[in-house]
Every structure is written in C-alpha cells, then in structure tokens.
Image (cartoon, rainbow, N blue to C red; front, side, top):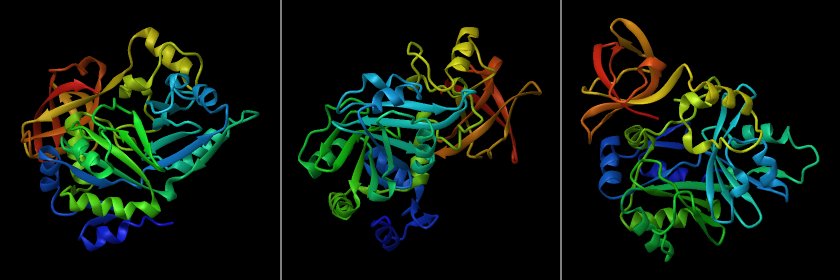
Length: 344
C-alpha cells in the first residue's frame, strides 16, 4: 500500500523528492526554527523497517551484528551495525525488542536489501525476516515540545523513557529517538491509522518539516548519515559508531578486523564535525588542507541559521583528527578557514 500521507504533503505544497519524500513545506530555515523553538514532525517513511521473529532471533542477530543484541529486553532498543568481512559498514541499524519480535530500523538502506543479507546466514535457526516498510508510516516528532505533543495525542507520558526505549499503543510503536540533538520520538504507525495521527498533530500546532531542516540539525548535532557520511567503503572504526559496537562480545561479521584495528589503536582517518565561519557551503569531497598538505575531505555540510556558521562532517586524516585542529577547506569559492569541533 502506498504511503497515505503523500497526497497530504502535495496539498500542503511540499517539495517532494522521488515523488514521496518531503524536502520542505515552507522554507528549511522556518522549519529549522520550528524544531529548535517548539517541535516539528517529518514523514520519514522512506526509511527501511524489518520485523524479525522466531525463537532464535536474538542469538542469530548477535552472531552477525556489532553490538550486544542478547541483552535486549522487551521495550528496549540498541544501535548496531551490519558489516562485511572487511569491517566495512553495510547498514546502520536501530533495533527495538518486542515481546515476540524485533523491529529493525534500517535507515537509508532499503529494508529488502538488509533482509536479503540476513537471510543468507539463516541455516537451521528459527528466524524469519520480513520487510514491513510498505505497511507503516514512519513519522519523527522532534523538538523540546515533542514529549508534550506525544502525551497530548496519545494520553500517555513519554518523558521518562530513556533513549531507544519504546512503548506499544495498540499496533503503533513510539520510540525515544533523537534525530536532531533537540530530543524527539519516532512513531511507527500502520498505514490505516496514519492520517488520523498526522491530522491530530497538525491541529495541535505541530509544524510539518522536511528533510532539509532535519539535515541542518543533524549536522549541528554531529550525527552521521548512512549513504552520505558512511558507506560500504567505510571501516566502522573510522566512522566512530562508539554506541554501536561491543568490544567484549564474541564473533560477528568483521570482528577480526575491528579487533586488529582496536589493538593497534588507530585507523588512518576519522569522521569529524567541523565549523566554518562563513555562509559558503563547501561541496561534497572538498578537501581539508593544512599548510599545503591534504588532510581529508568533506562528506556533508550546511549553513546553520542558529549558529550562523557552516557546520558539517568529513574525514580528517589521523594526524589532524583532533578537536580544535584548524584547517582550510578548498572550495569553489576560495579557501575557507575551518576548525574541527569534535570527533563523530
């Protein structure tokens, strides 16, 4: 079933990517301030969703993914990654444990693609993996007023939930998921109930926002995005992912390479956040330079209306990957002095 909200996005004048992903309704700057000052909701139904069932689901995934999946209990969640044997990142995953199943948010990697990889490793285990992306509308409610908006809508308090904890209200899942550095919740809603939730949030004054505003806030918070800052060529330790890797568990795909790099104590480059005191946004792959020496490259950047600087992510070579390091970005509009603000 197609996303039932697309016609609402169209009627509200949203600019749509691929005919279904709202980029903005008004302007990205207005939507940015809505989230910063109050709250905003975005339709992120293009992100993949899997449902994993079967009595061996936790042990099966624990043997494949980077984090300690066995410690999941009903109502809790965890970030993990799916790697290949060379420790390159195939998917950035968020797992939510239910009573009889496990929901996996596969992010920008299609659910069907992750399902196909997982199914290749099922031999005798009692595990079933289903791509449920088409059956759900996936909303994210972000901003300081998000918990109050959710409480008013559902009549349940969510403010006491820890990150990635979730509650089921009938077939709808509400997850404590910060995507912007401003607090927030993801709502996984069956298609048939989505329009009522969307309209109710609009009536409560929640601003609809698109991907462009979310991108600015993501970069301010220093959160990487798969397919933009990380891909199948990225070694997981280069990208940070500190909350997605257990260094104490047993084997998983790519574990030997992770252990070797951890033992050596270094990788050749690290994902970093940077700021440039300018309104000139460098393009992807623009080079970091230090004293004429190439020091890395940009993966994503945007101008922040709140900080009044360009914020972005990129890879800095090992010798330069330190907070406070001053570099120069070679951009189409000239040299941009920049500083590394943190490691991702």
